[in-house]
Image (cartoon, rainbow, N blue to C red; front, side, top):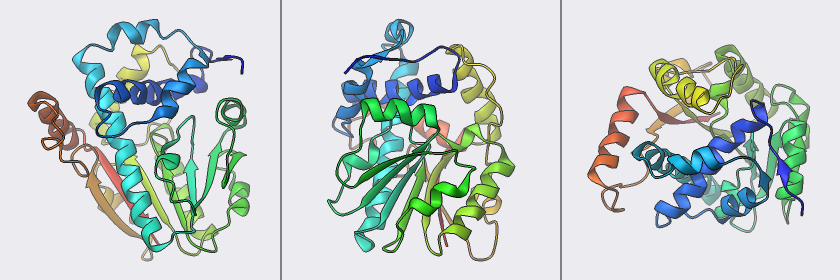
Length: 276
């Protein structure tokens, strides 16, 4: 397999942030979640990681790695909870990038669909070709034609990790309603951040990486209110960093634990579940 080039200041470069965080998370927090796919993918990318490598020993990047691991852990928890009652369900990774979270919790029966833009899926097909009950679909999330390829007879669990924040509020709300229209019953899980978090965290992170021109930046200050788009939708919310893992029990340092609680509350970081 040849190395795949990721160009600077492109949408493709946004794949690097979560991927590198998971790689660093493997080094620092393997007892919480180990993602062997991240290390393998990075070895096959032609991208200058030197700037990130120089910073990875800093407290900021250690916290970023913990954040990445905890998001995957939260998604896995929600997915496995859904599969416990719908073991043959379709699992849909929306805006999948190079994420392999569902494979880490494969129950041996689910069907996995990875959805992303054509250029991203092309990279994914080279680095992470589908195996077994897995299908990669090249499509824009706002183009509903991809929904017709999902076999939802046994249920559908959809998730978007670090994706919706790159969309506009109207786009996210319309997408949720279209998914509800496309699938008679389903569960959608995604992460959100408040307006202050977008300004302080996301835009600064993108600027640090030299990524420009990202429009949208969806935020959600009150998910229980803002995401209740019609009477048939049920919304539940858990804290992103502290709602799924007992950080003290896992041996996370007091400083990192304190930051996790602070970020959850100040920046309104949540994992949202929508069912209909």
